Length: 115
Image 1 (cartoon, helix red, strand yellow):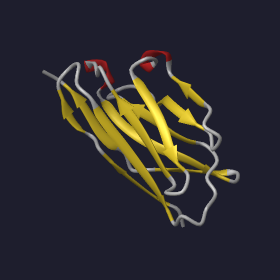
Image 2 (cartoon, helix red, strand yellow):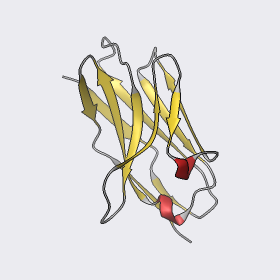
Image 3 (tube, one colour):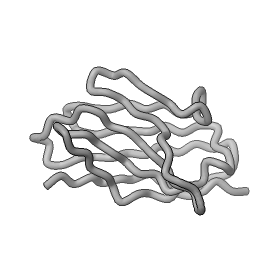
Image 4 (tube, one colour):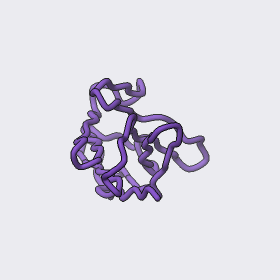
């Protein structure tokens, strides 16, 4: 059974930064794609950023230039560095990993951007 543990959410002022982490266990699994999605109140879940095992990345247009995604394959961990946060970035952020033909989701971590 794969478990995902997310951390790093919280309340930040506009223009601030947060770093999200998501660790997958047990580490015996080979993880292909890793990524972050978010869901704001009243909206559908949307892709934020993904990264392949080889390091190729995809970003939503709304976060390009502000967010970066990285991963540590040895630790089965993916990170999302969020800079220049905006009020519209407020959402629950979910980690997703792909192992084989299955995908797994974390429970979500709240990010609130407010003055």
